[in-house]
Length: 496
Image (cartoon, rainbow, N blue to C red):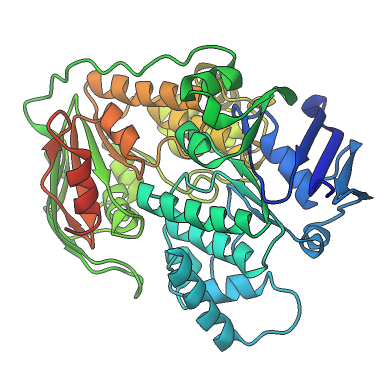
């Protein structure tokens, strides 16, 4: 039986830099194949070539033994190739069902599609309301929409780029069950992830890229996570050091009995949320996506406002203030949506730095100082190892992990009093994730209050001093991480 897919010496260059350098890969029918590598190693570019979104400069693609030219995603879908991007390709102002309908070929009935979606979501544990508008969905819920859209097309090759980055452990296990069933039915799967334990659990083989080249391959079940990390990075990944917290006497961030109805009819009402984060502490919030995290962050960041006395920074009421006014009081914010909320995709990194750091001397006497903007961006790029062509690169030109490093670096470089972070290491490779987590801990130990919302429990246990769980808009009592049990946190996440 011929291979499902073979890539032979595929090359791709961008403006003098090499994204893929003579990459070859073989994929059998029914195989789950991991593609590993650091941020910027060329994984996403290679898969975009396979999906027809990018054209290779050289090399050959064989589909089931015959050479093919995949000129567009439409060509890829006709062959039976589906792809879930790390950055979602969805329309904000239409419903879930309408988003999925836009990707279907041929006639359809919207009512029948809604019913089919509900059935697929129930069967695979990827539930999402078909009538809900996209811009009201959390990142985790949008991930479900992308996956359901691919499953509707019954693909013969499914490409998944960081599919569990914003899923809870329970949701990830449910997805693994779906993927194993698809593989058993003959569907081939290319799986890109920086979560090495799930690679070991799920994948049959792995190919490792570094700087655009294949540097090795292995069977993940026969390697340790540390060995896989060493293959990816070329060195051992250092552990995160968390010195003992020396908290300030008074909280830097306070939320007092916050109740607020959701703006979205399908959203989550916040009910009686209270928390305190002192300077010197990292406070973590765990929870299944769609349980009020987005609504809470909107209120804390200033995107939404609330009654006086409900949110305080350094003892001063900020609940009525705009996002800009809160930043003037020392707040910084890393949103979960990197493109659109975290950055302006078409602007340069220098201009994206200016968007939130203009108070850091980038504007003088009402005029933008371009040289300072470029120097600021260059410092973030250097210190946070952002792989790009320089301050003039646009946000959308960066890989997901490199863009995340830039956004986190942009906010931390401003030395905030209070930092809000959502999904801090989403789509970031293991070495960069360890570095970013260390930066969050170090910022807190310099006196900042750091609030982290993440669906990755291992991350929260690694960097946090206290952990709480949000479920159905309510926040549990915080527990010291040293005393918290993963099983009890998991039960709270499930609503127990």
